[in-house]
Length: 204
Image 1 (cartoon, rainbow, N blue to C red):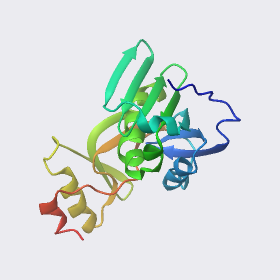
Image 2: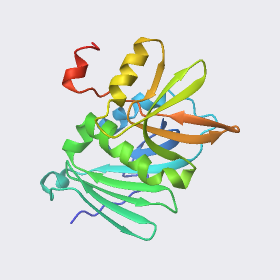
Image 3: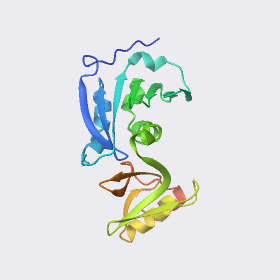
C-alpha cells in the first residue's frame, strides 16, 4: 500500500502552466513530470477561466503495482487507475488533483499529453466554466470554425487540409470553450494532429 504525504517537502518542484484554457498549478517530486509541462508554459495566463492544483508524486513502489484502467466516483470525488501504473484522485469541489505515478508513467510524454492532462481537463472542465467539445477547431481572421463528426469521420484530415490553405489549427480532437472578457474563446491542447496512415502520406 502506498502512503504519500502531499506536502511542500515531498513535492519541491512547482510551476504554473495553461492547458485547455485553464491554469494548472503543478507540484511534483519528479524532474520528468516537470519537463512535460514546458510545452504549455509559453501560453499567456491573462483572463484564464479557472485554476486547479495538480500534485504528482513519482513513487518507484508503483512500478510493480496493479495494472488496468478503472474509474470510480463518489459524490464530488473521482478515482482513476490508469496505465502505466498510475493512481489519480479528483476532488471536483476543491479543484484538486492528486496522483501517484510509476517511474514509467513519469517518463512517458505521450501519457501526459494524450491521456492524463486531456482526461483531467475533461473531468474538471465544467467546474471551471469550460465546455469540452469533441470537435476540431480552426481559426481564420480571428474567427473560429468548429468541425464536428464521429471518431474516424475525417476531422483531423480536414483540419490538416485547411491548415495548408491558411487556417490556424486550435485542435483536431477536443476543443475547450470558455467565456473570457465577454467573448467565447476556444482552446486546444498542445498536441500534433493525429492522422490515419492513409491520410498522413498527403501531409508530411
